[in-house]
Length: 154
Image (cartoon, rainbow, N blue to C red; front, side, top):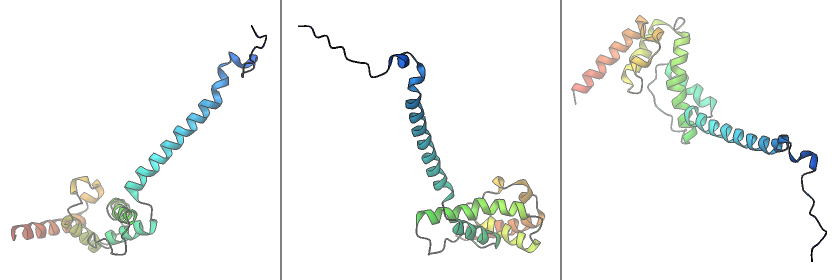
């Protein structure tokens, strides 16, 4: 027995051959991919910069005051450690570079000496303005010689 019933198409006839009928699906997939990219970038930024501005500022302040890198004990969370590290090394270098003309010669010399004693600061990677500053260079040489002297005494 043959039935006279024919199933109706879910998609109306006028939209069956229209390529635009897939647009909502593509838009949804695009937004999901975009959301994944945003989450991935946020994770990458967090790993690099941390997320605590006050800790970043404290790290930068310590570098400008020519204090050795010493993470305060109150920062036990990984995000705070990352923030302090970023503030001390990366933002600190940019701030010194931006303020090199207004920092006192004594301060630049102290920063240079401290930087020479720090193994994480590589002289060749510093900006040219810092490397060519005579006061910073003088302090860096003092710190480098002091570090070399300590190394021979071991």
